[in-house]
Length: 113
Image (tube, rainbow, N blue to C red; front, side):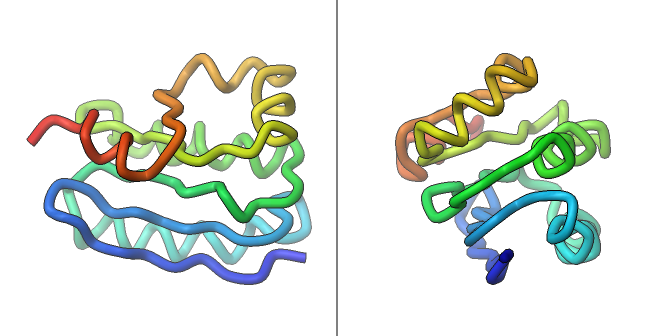
């Protein structure tokens, strides 16, 4: 079950924390949540996946969709990705399309100011 998504605005990015299962049944409500952020904020996006327990192809595809929404110029980064989630992203050949950082702090350092 997907529990929630919360956003934290930093100097040069918005950190979006995802919790729980991120899959076909749960990804739908996250689209409008992120779209609202994209309308308000031109900064980079960092998805904190530390508390994501499960992801499927629909959840992984969400990150591709966000990147296609004009984020290529500033970036979409994935941070604190659990090993089991990284395995899925690699199998789907999605991991190579993103900067993946060990921590949110590391991701914040990699974003252009």
